[in-house]
Image 1 (cartoon, one colour):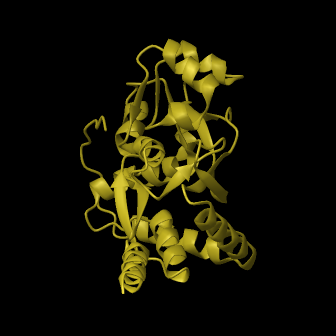
Image 2 (tube, rainbow, N blue to C red):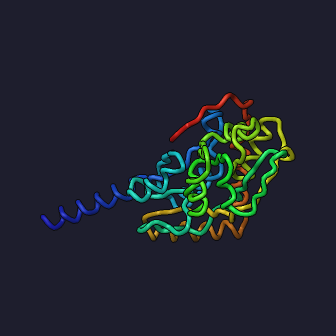
Length: 254
């Protein structure tokens, strides 16, 4: 009798554990801040599709990008987007689900010559949030020596700072820059650009090796059959659908 009760207890514990939603970390986007009707875009679509395909209940937890790695390392998340190689100890990474091209941008009348990342240290520099972690140790060293370096969550404010001459250089994903410029009624032709950084690859990270393996298999399959590209396109359309005119921005220091 006692053995039967013990087995039943184990069974119900297993069922309860299996039904516990996975805590999935997504980075907060400034476009969601600015537009309450905006969808979260590609990454949330991707996570939802993956979890539904694997029939895994999940809970989306949105935090500033800089906190994703910290929360995953602390065991506060089961899965997180925006992870990079090398991974954290105890965290398993999938193959890349997206690649990002970051560049340095300046106004057209900028007279400086930038040949390498190290040259950025001589100028007032603004970048996207968590850039020092995303762009590697050389960029982190540069920002420690750059006068008035700052990182902004709000992409529109960052672009406006460049356009108004309040910063000399802006480091940003080129697609994000184009989207912001379009919303402001400006064009990329007004700027100089410097291709100083390697392509950034973002991966999913999980503390569960089996889960990371399953996700990796799906990502590779979807890359081959075009499903990832379709999700990217859908995410882009949702992110900027019915986007309102830009409003005055404020610095956020999350």
